[in-house]
Length: 300
Image (tube, rainbow, N blue to C red; front, side, top):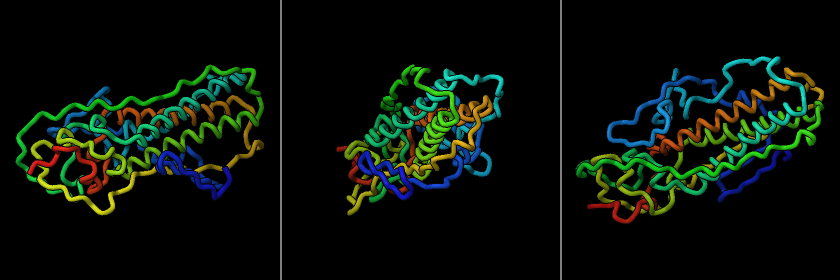
């Protein structure tokens, strides 16, 4: 893709911007790791598949928000002696990068299909998340439902053929560009979540009282003239690279491998959060409106 190119797809929710001279993909997200997960507020019911993934986004040192277990940045430099300078090793690295891309594609598709009630932690949405909605704190107590988020359709990565991979600097550069693209996609999805989902990301007429904070009654819902649009995933492209700057060495193979592994970790952190259930922290305040409510959600 050439500089200045703009591509939109999935109902306008994915934007790819090409930018020559972009910073290294691994530097595109803050290095905030090891942040303790938050527990869900009282009355909120999430689907905790793994105790290390909590109610998100969690906030670590300095108030840096982080989905899942952090940005997914590498925690060590690795050991060049642990990798081989072979076509088979290049194929392994390539498959890791492709696995990351498959994951980011699945996340993109999941978000663009529209959030449904089962994707949201029970009782997670407060009055602050709604716009044009009047509430009253007198709804009889009911245990909020545990979410059952939709599955992510992650496509399998093929075994590949080592004979189709050449042991050259040009091939190392190709692999590196694939892994960097995967990191940029994961970073863009994380940035989309940090910026906040909106009512435009929710399927119209679907939200029930099961997703509304315990004790909160919706007594009136006035349609807004222009409901908030869906959030978008903005991916900034990188430079084409220079084969002369890539060395045909085990060290270079390890660099490429670390980039691709970082992409997988970042994607996995987002997937873990979605499987736990999205919540009020994931939505911009005031962006859920009357058009998002299911029949019967308003009880004057």
